[in-house]
Amino acid sequence: MKHSEQPVVVFDSGLGGISVLKKLVKEMPNESFIYYGDSANAPYGPKDPCEVRRLTVESIARLDVFQPKAIVIACNTATAAAQGALEEAHPCIPVIGIEPAVQRALQAHPGGRILSLATAGTLASPRYQKQLQAVQGLGEVVSVAAPGIVGYVEGGKQDRGGIIAYLRELLAPWQSTMFHGVVLGCTHFPFAAAEIQEALGYPVCFYEQSDTVARETQSRFAQLGITRCEEDRGSVTMMNSANNKEILGFVWRLFAAV
Image (cartoon, rainbow, N blue to C red):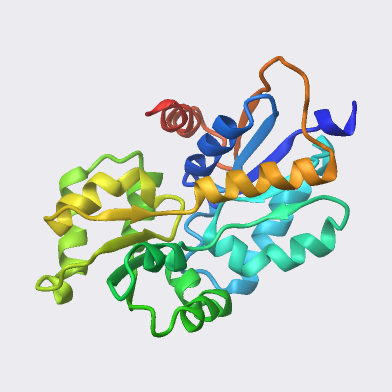
């Protein structure tokens, strides 16, 4: 197999990374992708960073048999905890991570008030704290851990009323505050954007980084000369550590959703 024809591994703690995979496939339809979600160990957000690092590195190691030409970490928590370790383990291929779009949101709303929703692990990470330091003085960032959204998506989005009630309670301290933008700092969260919007009760702009990750991946491939040039569309393979039909069926439904 030519190096350019080797697959791209896309990894997430569960189902959220499908939001990134969709953008990758849209930008690079000729590439082949293997999506691996670690739903058996989800959620990653409350776990110790060392545990997240171990789970991420071990999951990716199982996929080395496919000889990936790149690894996309489609999980903010795993990026913060494990990108460096994955780069050390795979020095010859691109390892591309994702982080909350705080700077992007503030650039769109200079001096504004931004709600940054993420997992506790992402918000506590040195990587996220460094981001906050870089945007000091550009506006106000209210960072809130929202682990319930991960459970809602991983559970098949079964209780819409329940997640809206959860979000209203979570955001009650800021009910008199108008946010100019909302950062979706976990790849699960775009699948609950409508519910977040309803809980807030007013129109708001959402910011997430899946399109940025797709463009960066495309750019890295062009620089390295590993873009798949065949005219035929590539393939998408879905894998999940939980390995049951219900989860895999829901993965495909998320992928197919507009």
